[in-house]
Image 1 (cartoon, rainbow, N blue to C red):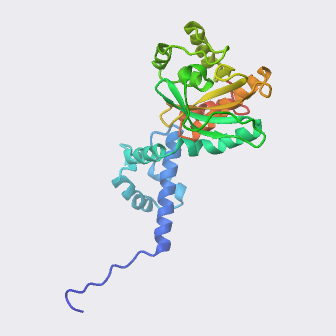
Image 2: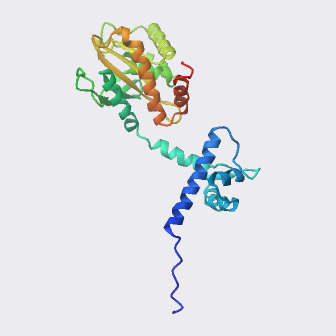
Image 3: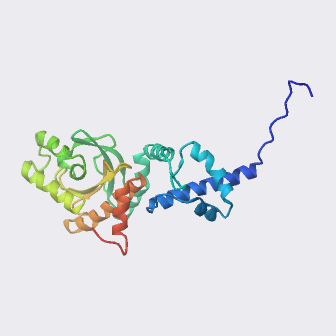
Length: 283
């Protein structure tokens, strides 16, 4: 064979590579699970037992993950998650689309209640509709995607102010109140009290304050940083959404908003759902 010709490197059989990858992911998943449950580190022996393999094999599998900082060695010769794992998770969470995450929950809510379901995001002291779900029997409403409303007259606005940035309340009150209906709350003191009640019960109420004859309840949606990024609401004619049903429907909206928040990576929402699960502690 001429000097300038070299034999190609022996390829690693695809089956072996796939097995190594699966084992490596099992290691990463096990360390992540143990860390979530309070372990400071996971020993080499424990990982070997989990995989059912030798410690030397575990060291070989973890070497690339240690090099890329997905895993870190600890002073006690164990393993813990590295900064690379955090950055990878952060990139995933930041890439989750709010509308896509909320869509299945909104469809379920609209179908189960027969009411119109909205998703809004804050923009200054306004809310902006970013999604809307109606069912066949739903009374058509004038709201539309891209429509903007003052937070002051909406259930979603109250929910965002109650659970969002502390400075938002003052900013909303600094904007002159506009009465959209004869039920609109234009007195600053009363509106502060309404925000306090919203915070206490977990959801905001628009009792015909934005549109005549329309009642609405809304709860905040949190992102992976546990920050309020929007609100989900259900709305309908007061005749089909009586005051007596507000508490039951409001509690349901709170739970659905928590489910959306969990889909966005909110740890505080996940904890709240566990507390309200059957056998848990109700809020």
